[in-house]
Length: 391
Ligand SMILES: Cc1cc2nc3c(=O)[nH]c(=O)nc-3n(C[C@H](O)[C@H](O)[C@H](O)COP(=O)(O)OP(=O)(O)OC[C@H]3O[C@@H](n4cnc5c(N)ncnc54)[C@H](O)[C@@H]3O)c2cc1C
Image 1 (cartoon, rainbow, N blue to C red):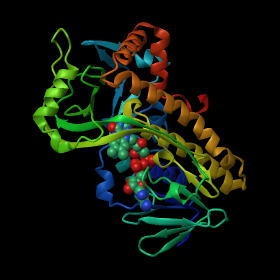
Image 2: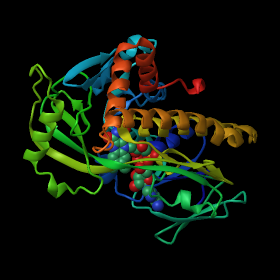
Image 3: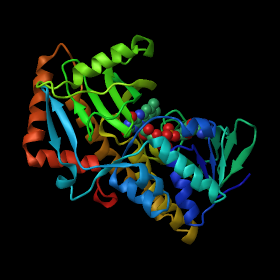
Image 4: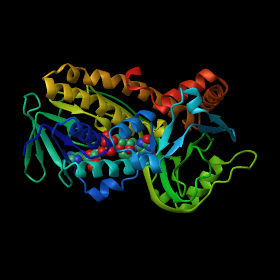
């Protein structure tokens, strides 16, 4: 088998890259280890930055997103039992976020890829990438087949094979693992608020989000080694009710059947450079952010926008300058987003129950963010997402 760009992974990064390349007349083949059913139902992120919505809209895959997505112009920070609205759009030049599930983005991109007749192979696991330093790398598949190409795009997430294909010592790794995880649920219950609520509480962080007018997405900070069995429905609701409660008792959290649940670790991770020879890493394959800033999916989209443009210059004009600039260009945004995600995480989670000093600092930071327009603007412009060229 042979193609111009071998794309490993059919998550948001790989699928959007294939879509952008297709529109530029560049051939690619997407290899995905899992089944279509599995990737279309994998529940993960749901907050799309303005720039992510814009690229999906401009390239013709935004119709359903505009019909079903929910545009949010603010969010709530809740602490000390009181809510404070951050007016995202007013503070960030009119930009907004859209709530639309990652698996819906994936479904839309898969449909577009198949409709355009592009190559997308499910249950096609890449096991190795060879000859990265030459002009004709080869991807080996578990089936025994091999795929020759000019460029490999490693879009296979944190646990994929791409990053590991770079020789030892070629990539520097920066990492922080947090001493907590998120228990996330989907419940058949109407959202209890029109906007997202980020709640800081002595018992730990909680987040109220949504996926539709009938479905609520909720998260709880839990211990990193907690198992789902330790969290029966009653315990989840009790803890959510406690952490989200307001002092005036006016907030009512709607409950409903929990039909999806999972525990995800919280980690900050960057491997750099995001390139080795003809291998380019994008999305979670190169970096992970703690979910508090709602950035993982958006960062993956930002990477592949830069990569698609660079590949176009390469295939159309033989110009390698943009490919050479790819890693540095992406890493500027990656580190801005790393900082923002870390900042949100350390401001909102219970860090060390035995260290009251931390709690006092958090409370001071939260009060400053809701009182100072400058501080609120910093949160807002990072949350809705900086323009591609701003970072
Ligand atoms: C469990 C979990 C929960 C999350 N929850 C949230 C959240 O609530 N909010 C938030 O903002 N962000 C969340 N994120 C982060 C966000 O979903 C990711 O940042 C986003 O999925 C990145 O997209 P990607 O395309 O880079 O990688 P992925 O979506 O991980 O896609 C990589 C793809 O590569 C495939 N693959 C892996 N190895 C191979 C191989 N060897 N050969 C072929 N294919 C392979 C995988 O099956 C997968 O389909 C979560 C992430 C995880 C893992």
